[in-house]
Image 1: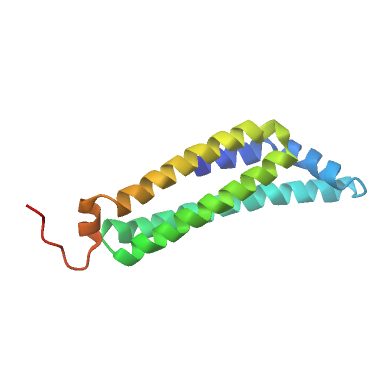
Image 2: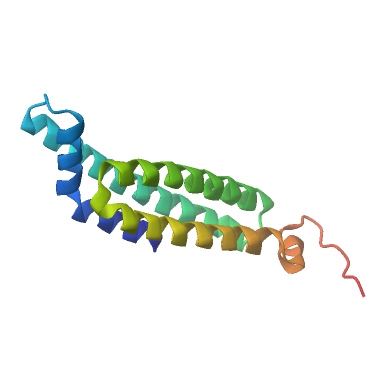
Length: 139
């Protein structure tokens, strides 16, 4: 869901990226500025598509109770949270018109990622689900 929101923000604000690139690099020809802005948008869309596929691929292992899939999911969630924060601060600084939208998407993404991390690691049922040998229940 948040990848879709991010993708829409990127796509809808292509002109803002072009203006930001023109401001940052005033000596570049207009075609180069446009290409750089398009590269930011296409790179962002591609990244979100790849991450969506990665999350779907990990979901299969998580649903089967594979501890390794849970660990990989955790790594992906942490990395995307850090990368998202860096990208959000950078894009927001370059294109102030989307700063609030980026912040909102980043906050929502972080809340959802923390919730997933909590659900796959903290509850006893979750720990039992991913344990190679189920632990006996405390009476």
